[in-house]
Image (cartoon, rainbow, N blue to C red):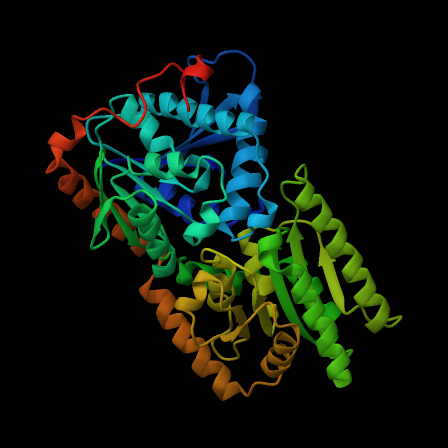
Length: 486
């Protein structure tokens, strides 16, 4: 199988470059070791019609990276507009933050159509396309309109919300109908998958049986494929990172005190405000913990042009300053707050240094930071993971200390418990979580999805007569916007 993987952005994956989320960490090993082609935006835009998409291609291990310049006229509406101001808040059950115009939606569809045309140059007789995440919900339908008959799979890294929430997205029905052009749709959790199937059955009135949806595109299978990491590799990185200057300086600066660590994109779904309030409450309830434990919070800025993100950055910075002002001393800072990213190698060393990993999103598809923290621990003296029960990772890492991120006092008490947990219990919990990580690796995720994609394409071919019906939209020209969508 000649696998073509597609996502919004492509990461070059240099060892010291910061990772900007779990997607890059997940895909790079697939490209490098298994020979896939990873196609995505270069981060640049171009003016003009771009009938022939420009791609910069470079080798990476056994595979290759292909970076496209996207159309300038539509990129803002596609990315900051519909994808991240309508879909992202809805997928994270924040319907109150949905903001999108008709122009944003049209730009989203135009970029999906543009990407479909660009992918034709990578198409071979044995090709299969694996589309990643919410930026490209409609890409499968665009490929089908271009007469692509090869297997096309889709994996959603975010949650999929309840029907009432996704119903708040403009054009939600058209988008879900377009998703049914995929042979296989993968989700992080059973709840996400069930929510999607419920929408297809109740809102679209389609036949759904045993995870399979029958539509005019044919047969689409929806299934669960929880994403993993390479725990052995991450453990090796953590061991080697002990001598890295950043890690060494951090250890020296602690002067014997304990450390909790949080590593997140600066996003309202990550629960940063509640997390900081929980530490504030912990130091208030347990004054003996002052000067004995601090929090290192790494929060990488993103999507700063979107109002909700700009407001969040200001709110978090103000709250950190307030908490440090109340609890800090002239020679002690309770919260070390950094607005920059770190490469995987350094992060592994920082995780290993911390006695507590704090992963408390309000809603998260999986959250690979939780898995990375566990894998980075010293087996002889492991730290404790405090994990939101609303992160997909909680389904697997059930021996972490699970918390409700909306319960500030509860989180404060749980963090204090983590800091005083006996070694025997820490080892028991860590070993159970490591067993889960070893059984659900990134390599296994890849193999399970691609095997299922092959099977789903065979299933779809059994319904070939269905595909002879007209598609959901007539074939259309990307340059004729008014004729495209209704």
